[in-house]
Length: 194
Image (cartoon, rainbow, N blue to C red; front, side, top):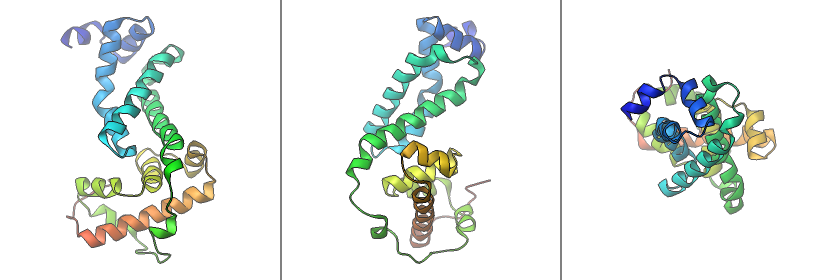
């Protein structure tokens, strides 16, 4: 890997090398994103094997379309976007078809806490991520896309092929579930957001 760093001293050079189909550049590019983007996939998958499948699908798309990237310096955000969209497409093909339970089976209509941010701010990061991963698939996806990835409700609705009102409702229910889980588990108190 040291050779790759010397030959490709910037992200732009690395991307240009990939666009020229230089195998060393492609290997260095893959290694650059492997652990971070696999981590993104894990947030959207049920299992590690599923996350690895999503990651591999995403990287096939990335290498197929890397020549279309006009601004090599924007590769980081572009790669992340492709990975997230691949995860959502996977959801639309598989998980969404498997959904059988309605939102009402997971959450009562009563709001567990009006101040969910204050409660979440006090939680241990690892414990909170574990609780997020235990959310029902749809809620987990909506929560991750909105809170972690920074997508708007309208963008999430378009990605997930659902009405925006449904996305807003699922996000609200995801927050309620997280608060309920936090209160039940009594997780350690640390900063999460901020």
